[in-house]
Length: 632
Ligand SMILES: *[C@@H]1O[C@H](CO)[C@@H](O)[C@H](O)[C@H]1NC(C)=O
Ligand SMILES: *[C@@H]1O[C@H](CO)[C@@H](O)[C@H](O)[C@H]1NC(C)=O
Ligand SMILES: *[C@@H]1O[C@H](CO)[C@@H](O)[C@H](O)[C@H]1NC(C)=O
Ligand SMILES: *[C@@H]1O[C@H](CO)[C@@H](O)[C@H](O)[C@H]1NC(C)=O
Ligand SMILES: *[C@@H]1O[C@H](CO)[C@@H](O)[C@H](O)[C@H]1NC(C)=O
Ligand SMILES: *[C@@H]1O[C@H](CO)[C@@H](O)[C@H](O)[C@H]1NC(C)=O
Ligand SMILES: *[C@@H]1O[C@H](CO)[C@@H](O)[C@H](O)[C@H]1NC(C)=O
Ligand SMILES: *[C@@H]1O[C@H](CO)[C@@H](O)[C@H](O)[C@H]1NC(C)=O
Image 1 (cartoon, rainbow, N blue to C red):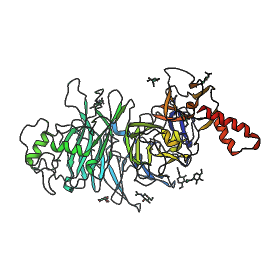
Image 2: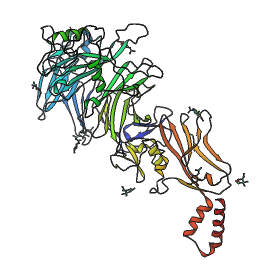
Image 3: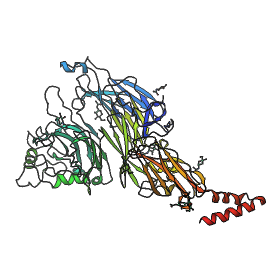
């Protein structure tokens, strides 16, 4: 069951019998993550081409919508069932291209009211079903909430009784995508001129202090109006709408949002001037004060690199409130474009007319101060982002980013005081299987990773992937894990764990008196002898460092190819005693490979001698003590 990682140079830590891979980025000790701590999986009864996933926070269950089926699985109880949603009346697909889609693909599974809302294409006749606890089921016309055929450029946001959607309501006309409110407080849609060929990414609603200021934000890409050859063809945007928007006052504008504004999202590396213009995914991190709520934007560029830029809703709101409108030089009306009006009122038509013809603000939304630059960027082509905030042993909160690659794996990246660190690569699926979905359960600290065949539940606190010694546990700098009572443990099991997330040296924390000798190998060495410290080189992509007491004394890397990383002591004297640790580091993944405690043989013996002193050894001991004192 336990295979080698497809990434030739990294031997994965093989996770349970599920074929899941935690590539520890190291050739060291592949270790099996045992079932209780490891991942669990649910394999669908059959493969699903367009699966959709729903998970209710703090539960252990998942729903998967497939073709004509809704699967339910509880990872804690193994309870599982399947419900059928067959096509009625042989389907409505007429157009030649859509005949193969003459099936009911479920496209939405959400909590709605007291029950669940399930919607599907209904074979070109979009349909929704209300599911109640008592398994009753009522179906209704789902046009505008489910597409006619499976379509990736769709967003549906269920917020209480309101449903927002980017799905067109008719199969023939309506080529221009719109952002609509389709259920709840009256139907509204965006003007066809305010976006150019939009590709929607994600949307959220955000409560402000006063209810009439509550907003909807959505993130999308569109064609860049700047057609100059050096300008990128696509541009990333954020748009705002007021939740209580009542539409316009004239018959032409009555069904249009009157509070729409859009702004550019900037993600540029100031050092290389590299522009990450292609918004791939976003993740919202709420805060008690909405201004401090954050947006983690995942961007890619034409060269296949990725960057993460972080924005605050306070900054976004500021841009929309204070910026001039692009191309508008006239006077500002009393109610400014984009301003939410008090409950029950309409935006004045004068304000709407200006906003409708100048929907873009001039100022751009920049990443958080002070750096206004990406959190990081690298050469991976990430597809999805998730952020989890973990309370570590020091009482501080750390953000951990989960990034899904295009090769079936997840990178776990931590924001630490000295920058971000990529601490783990989890090969969840074979490289060729794309990750369709990544859901974070913040309360239970688990991830649900979905493909077209299965869902895997993975705990965020996988502490046994690290070598079980104090130094490796601390060097990993994993905020979920720390050293306690002789093992690398989860902070959720024990808050008192020892960790090294700040900038202090880690060694001191592993040598506190209460840990007796920890796991150092004690080696007695006589003075004036030669001694080799030897660290095996296991990966040619790693750097190896020897530390003595707390200081770096030797670095080895492949620029000097050799079998092992030696440190040679020509003539051992008292300064050479103490603790030596060899640390390997590869792509930020660090572990302690060799740990030796060199002690003076004579002193060591004299200490032991005191305990077991016999009459016959008195003379010998006396001689030793004299010798030891001579060396100091
Ligand atoms: C999560 O669910 C458990 C019961 O399953 C409950 O005891 C706990 O309070 C819940 N936690 C939160 C934060 O809602
Ligand atoms: C589904 O439930 C049945 C019992 O109802 C159980 O025997 C079976 O193992 C479960 N399937 C999975 C994949 O856990
Ligand atoms: C479905 O549920 C929603 C919310 O509870 C309700 O407003 C709607 O009337 C229901 N539709 C049907 C057909 O029962
Ligand atoms: C830009 O958008 C167009 C469609 O609008 C798309 O075909 C093209 O691939 C995009 N370019 C990049 C670099 O993603
Ligand atoms: C420490 O671990 C041992 C077993 O390794 C266990 O018996 C003991 O209860 C643990 N102590 C604490 C304080 O957790
Ligand atoms: C080792 O050092 C001591 C004093 O520091 C010196 O007396 C001795 O000759 C040295 N031994 C060798 C082999 O160099
Ligand atoms: C290799 O080590 C040298 C110093 O010994 C350092 O300057 C160089 O950057 C290292 N190379 C890599 C690839 O780590
Ligand atoms: C390292 O520590 C040992 C004992 O703790 C001490 O004897 C030795 O002199 C120290 N060496 C250095 C270079 O700090």
